Length: 276
Image (cartoon, rainbow, N blue to C red; front, side, top):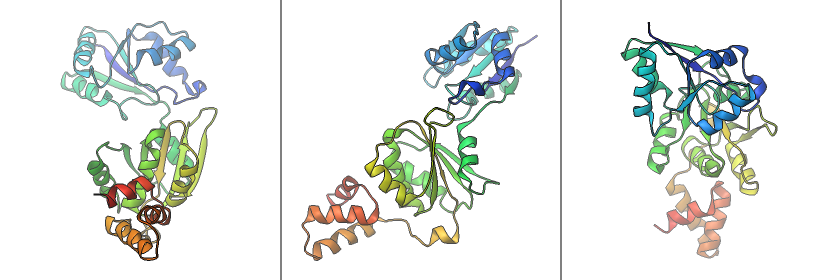
């Protein structure tokens, strides 16, 4: 008889969100596969879970996945957990699930919190449908392409972002999607949880004066006639703005600074474009 893979949801911040079923499952399975064993050990210790565990993450998913499949084929049960929330969302869990199906092995889920659904609910935006983009690509061209593909969607777009990339992502959003409403949530379910509803341009201005801290989930409102009124900022718009300010008598550097403020962009972004 083969074992079962349990996709086990864990808290995204507040440990009180751990379900009774999740605790029982993690206690009863033969092994726990964790994205970061050091991080997960804190969770397991909190609930006095002594089950042996192994690592399963993006960099070892092939070798570790084969080991997990062998365990399951030999009748062992395995619970897959991620650093926070449900497995298979912005982590390699889906690769393991596909392997199980290919081998005819049983997979089930023990539902738990997810940051994207929590943020979507808190946004207040109409959400009978939504698009989840996860973490945007690091490559500038790929990031622009990902946002461009969602430009005309009439429902919210959910994006994960780290604090050190937030300002850049907000600039990319306004450049590709225009100045829409955005719900910026951070540290969901934790002590310093925060939800701010802005226009994207207001968010750019706010974070130019306040350094981002914590992990963010962004919910960008969908395309509408109102959001279409503000056209995305193009390179031509930036060049035109700088030239306009130079014509008014400003130096090149002062013109770049003025254009950045006018278009709600970072000074370095305008400088980089003008210096090409």
